Image (cartoon, rainbow, N blue to C red):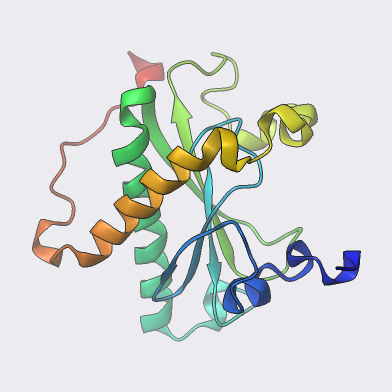
Length: 175
């Protein structure tokens, strides 16, 4: 495959045709994908499908669905990563680098450097983002990926009256 035909050049189109290997599952508003980097294990994204430029480009019911799906990914991350020291999940909709609607869902952990924990993840040094040791790998992250997919699919199948039933979380940095 030529470099221009690589799935990373059109992540949403590749997801729609089954060529994006990062897809966890299809959600009503788009695709849940595991992040290319996993220095914060469980980092995921929601890619809007059909492709749109911004949240406000969507009709209000579609906006609500996108935000609900984003929160379901966060809930799956909570379920899967809590035993590993998770203390919270951060949600970000940016669109500065990739000009289509997508959301970043970042797990935050007790073991993170104390100077970075209260900051947005973008404060991590650039080498963390590009270090091959942190790149997604089926060998290193396949089990995590499988657990996230199972948790998401379970949440999608769960009746809505059970949503939000877990205990409130507190930010460990304030303890």
